[in-house]
Picture: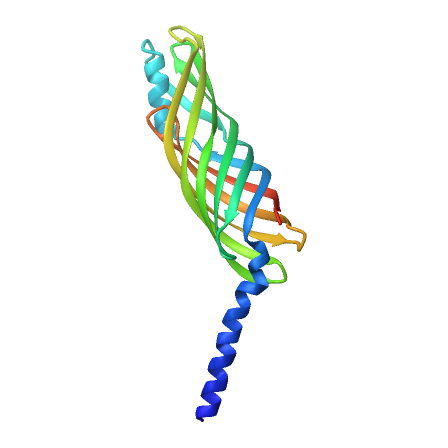
Length: 215
């Protein structure tokens, strides 16, 4: 029995020691870029309040029509501390979300919201074997929000709102890395951003990412 226990413990220790060597080639610096689809959840109440502020002569604000689909573009630089933990600096752009509403009497206001900024994330990977990984990420961000308002009709005027505020993000994905250092990811991320109208915007982004790890 003692010999069996010693043999089993030795096998476990050898197996644990093999993990870093099996995935050690994935440590180090990498760069990448990604492109994807973005779906925002614009804050109806903050838009309604802002339209009211921008049109002091109005008596009511109608139903808000929203186009909440756009795209995501990002560039990033990362460093794998171990085979399962990495830190990543991202520059991202989320563009062209639209809304419009009728304003009484006899007016209409429309808006376009754009977001871009920088984020710093921590990524945790779970190896699946054969170069495959699943992972989660989370981090903080700092973003510029720009909302361009265009008014038509009585007591409505064009205006531009800008805010520079912190936010946060989190997400998950699946990755495959070739021995050459070339890798691909498919991932989902949620960005929580200030909307420059005393509210927040949640943006869900689905992207395909290409990266290269320096050997």
